[in-house]
Length: 362
Image (cartoon, rainbow, N blue to C red; front, side, top):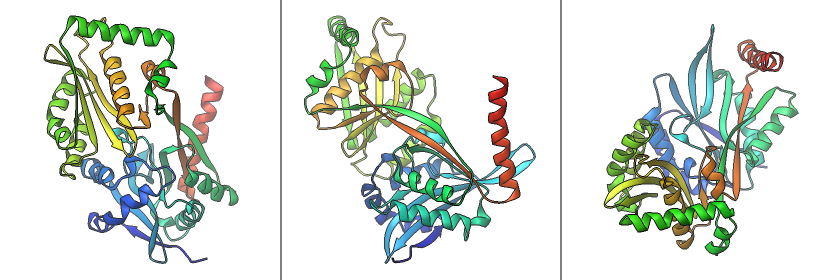
């Protein structure tokens, strides 16, 4: 078998040279995600990369063909008296990148995972102390094979739950999906729709592409006024992200208006046939009897079905309304792994003792 060649990218200029091949590899992934795209990760790095961090992107080539990318960043951290270097994914934790992974050509997951493990244990061993990878899809084949590599060497690691993302798998017939919702939920939704249109001049407006880009300021103006979580970091990143596109930005913005006044707004991320709900804000002072956010979500799911989307992803969050609409879900995991030196071993032991304390004291 041809040996896999691994190159390390540490500068923005080196990263730019990978742009033509990046997204085609994401599309050839077994679990492709919006959050792995070149534009999203570059926008994140431009918005959040700090002085204590440096890029450590690993590119895996075989016969000069790109078959894998590990979009890593190394962060200098301190915990108590310990100073250490942590490898994590570009895209975490800021801005809510919900599905992160090592990007691998379909069918080559085992080879790349094993190559990455050996690289971290040998040539790259002097650069890190802790590997902390979050929001990896539970079904990730990379994760499966990387853990196998760790276990084959008899090493210690931890897997923890990261997040749960409620999802609507949209059938070709929307009415079939809606009929499957709970009786009380359907009744409440239909009632709110009737009241909204009876008492107000209501409008649901959707903007895509160039129009969505132009409506970003209006969305964030409303979001920052009405949301309990001001979107400063997300706003900065979304503008940088939008600047990477001309008229085809893969974002959809939806507004719900009543008597010409915006009462709810949603910002969606688009990838292939999946529409993901990224940010939402609601005017809670406008008719508290109406579930405005729920109304807009229902309208968006219906429009998504008619537009040919097969998936509506609520992304991470355990808000109850999401589970009323969802008929599926995606679990993500956290992987922690320590280098084979005294300091990382001490950090691993500290983590283990913290868990023992929870068992004994709670």
